[in-house]
Length: 280
Image (cartoon, rainbow, N blue to C red; front, side, top):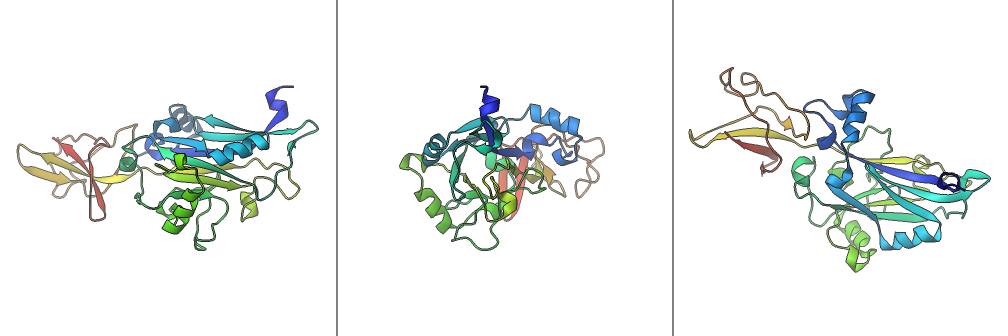
């Protein structure tokens, strides 16, 4: 019997990033379906992140006849199903069964183009069950149709972070950016992976990062001058953001002036503002 007939999709996690998916000032969310597909064809999470099941979860996957499969936009977990019902797992899954996946960042510039602040002793938690050490404001992992972007609100406390890291093997505890932690049945029925009779719902969860916007500072070393944009501009890998010399600066600059877009390499933070430095 074929793979498609013996295994069914238990759940999927889709990871998106607006730095790679926006086109200049045109956002991915505002694009047509055809344009979204074009941007997704060029997109791969391998450009900035790696997601792996924890060692403990690897054992669980084997015991319950599950398969972890990477995709360009995240991963899927498949499970062996009964021949008579492709929504019914071959091995009954306990409703409190938890699967954990570690996220590590493999692009040293990730913080430069991602719209949040890193914290030394806190990790991001993307889950469907609130840890006991977290407040009622805990943010649950969004679903694919939710119009939600990841922010610092998904950082858990230092105490929760320590508890989460302690569940990992020593070899897994380094450089953890975040954890995806999914329980078969979540705190809310809308986040369940199986229903009350154990049949698969096959949900698609989403982690959607936003691109950072910075004030663009143009530095002329020869003339000893600096000018900066009046408003923050988006950083994107694709497209070009036009700078209007008259409206984007105070005081206005000569209308014939041209200004390049910055790279993500040179970013500084002054107080609460981020600046991209461009030497002209």
